[in-house]
Length: 82
Image 1 (cartoon, rainbow, N blue to C red):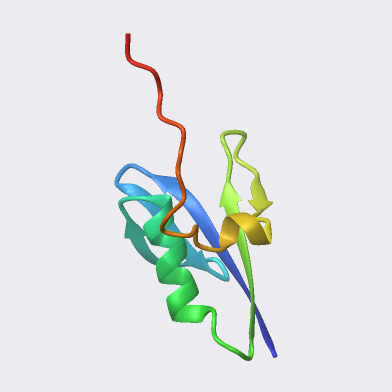
Image 2 (cartoon, rainbow, N blue to C red):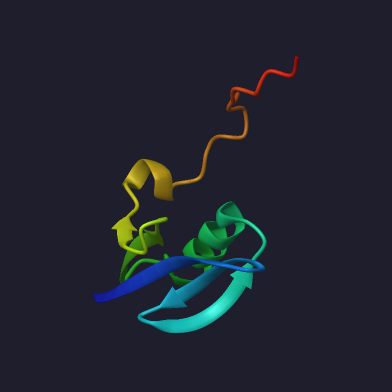
């Protein structure tokens, strides 16, 4: 089993995906970046550890709930417009 580190780093064009420190691609949103990484590298035989760079510049591991896609019928709270 191969252990891979997938890092999501903010970029001027969106979110860059790095696998074991090597740049792979940049996506417009974090959701697209996570989906692409999961599709490309999240297959049986790989232990994929997903991490996201925060405002403080540190990488934090994404919990399984955040790393997995949301159900399509998820209702999100919308900001109020007065």
